[in-house]
Amino acid sequence: MFGARRRTLAWAVAFLASLCPGSAGAGGPLVSLEHSLDARGRFMRALPSLRLDRTLTPLREVPAARLPALQPLTMVGMGADSSVVTSHRYEVPLLGLEVLMAVGPSSRGLAAVDGSVVGVKPWTAKAATVLLPGFGLRAVERRWQFSGRMRPVVSVFWADADVASGGGWTATDGSAVSVAAGLRVELEACRRLDVHQRACLLASPSLYEFQPLGAFTVALRWESNAL
Amino acid sequence: MNRLSSSALGLPLLLALVTTGCAFEADSSERPGVSLKLSDPPAPLTRRRNAVVMEGCILDTWQRASLEAPAARHLVQEVVLLCPALRTSGEVDPVDDSARRAVAQTVADLRLQGYRVFLGVTFADPLDTPYAPDALLGALSDGAFRDRAASALLTWSSLADGVELAFFSLPSEARPHLTSLVGAVSAAFRGRSTTPHLGLFVPPSVQSPSDVPGGDAFDVTALAPFVDRLRLMTVDFSCCHPPGGPTTEPGWAVDVLRFHRAKVGTFPVDVTFPLYGHDFGPHGDRPVTYLEATALAATTGALPARGPTQALHFDYLDGLGLPHTLWYDDALSSEIALRSWDAALPGDVGVLFYGLGAEDPLLFPRLARAVP
Image 1 (cartoon, rainbow over the protein chains, first blue to last red):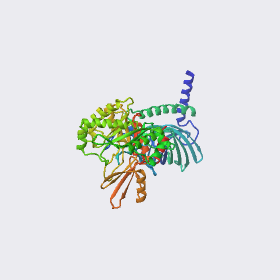
Image 2: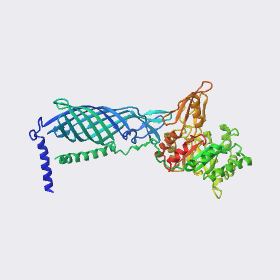
Image 3: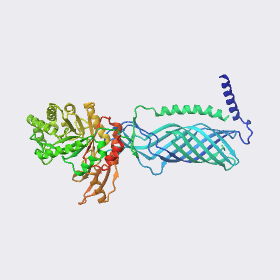
Image 4: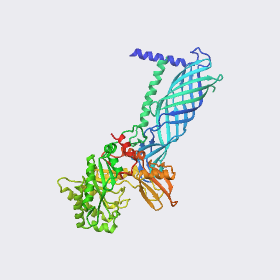
């Protein structure tokens, strides 16, 4: 048991040591801070299970409810991210943020809450995601760079919803909202533009985000290590 | 190195993820919503005790074909023939033997197909219009009338499996007298060796005093012990001029049920789903069948749209250029309504489909596929 602990400790020390300048042989700074901006599109397999607040219609009171996952949705938006890279191989994504809004035609998603028909308007959907620190690896081949990362995220998704009240709709009190933690994989291919900048294509399947394999994100990204 | 780093960082991250995910999801105050996305094959619907109401004593060929079809036989257990009428004299029409024989033959035909058959008795004059409030009140408050009515209804009940009292538009002052009448009928029925079924159509109140005409005449708490079933008339939700609205509202029907269940507990109760629509015009509204509605849409070039409850509606101008709005249900909107009820209504609550013959011909086949 103690032997295993010692081995783990040795590996951890070795890893931390690898972060120190001078411990690797590659050229350039051994530890660099990188940042990026991107335009991204995201396909969601289904709308998340949204929380609906209690709503008073002219007809009745509809209690707070958890709506089921509804139809697929496509969103576009922007993202910003940052990471620390060491030894040109190990990458620790730090904090990132993405904001998205729904695009494309979509019909009202219907659900029933306590007997009343509820219509979610996917075309009003918006999402914000905080990308949390994770871990990744990268490989550089001349002007090309390939990397893979895994990182947790916290996402907020919200959309407007109405409750049927006879021949008319009544808007709910506030948007229907879902907040969830998730886990994403990011696979990236970049081409160096100059010493500091790269243009990248990012593909990011969500292992879990509101649901298993819930979303797939594609982004065109500009990266820089110039502070 | 890679293996160590992945496990050292990945494991805590995964644990954090799972714990935060659980924290986000837990909230016991939320009701679960039900998806109304329709699929093929359809998702299963709760099997309920279903009945149909047919206005009239004799089936036309369309109605007969509907009830003979496997889909209806799979879905529906009871048929209510809404045709005998209680008069202020205490008699129940039709009184002539040939008419009663025809009714008995219809009942026998339906029983052969496996249905239980009840006779829905209205309280109306020979022109099939409701009596004036004074006439109703005068009759109901007369003990001799109640005895004659109970006796006549007992006779009618022997033609079928029982009787359903479908008294509409009663004045509020009739409340104690209606209870007495139903009590007298119940006593007459329960004196028989084989007790016929006695049901009661009840206006769709959601509050007390009632918010619907005639609702206060029904003291449901006092009436329930006398009958076997209460049929809540959750139809004609919208009234009476353009823009009108859907014939029923699933959420409203849930509230009607809860209002009555609060009074009678787990007493057997049905909610009603209309098979007909309404044409709202400047001079009032009239019921329309699905086929009439679709024909009107085609004739006038109107494009039906779906309302919030998914009932169809369209506007048109009549021959005088007057504006009308027509609301009606098709198989899809009916399935949406029944799915809305699926989680909100207890499984012992039945559904009474009102107006056999007015429905979308695809309705029963569609529902039959969803009900196991």
